[in-house]
Image (cartoon, rainbow, N blue to C red):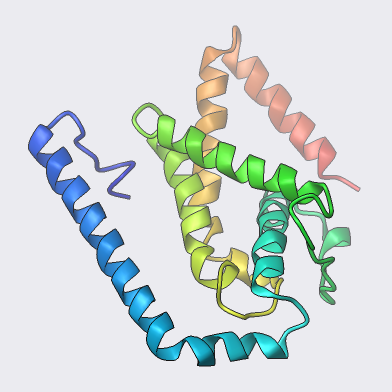
Length: 193
């Protein structure tokens, strides 16, 4: 929230304080993670023995799953819900090729959100919130790969970001009302079965 909606980047004192807080948090977090791995590393890595995937496979697979979560949120289709989630593992960056495309798409969306954080703060908040809220369950912890309930909190501001982007695009259209009604009708038609 502070980086997008409540920022005062034109104030140099604010900017200096924010950077100091960000670097301090990063350094303290790195020290904590280093100490944790030094002290409890064997226990942490032993947890992976109970999974059918390695840490690297998990991280690569999660890149694909993050985009699947976004798709599920933006195009809700009950036919593609995976109640019995048998997810194909990503064995490498190009195995399957959608892994690399997913990593690029995530990196591009984060860079775009960072670049637009002053002009489109609601869009940036939606992107940052979605990926930030997924950090605990979709990174290095040896959890199961996929659960739909992991989207509840991340979706909180994702819709705000999409609506903000759609609204700004509608404002630039030659006939915003007609375009808005047309898009609404098209969206309703696409979601019908």
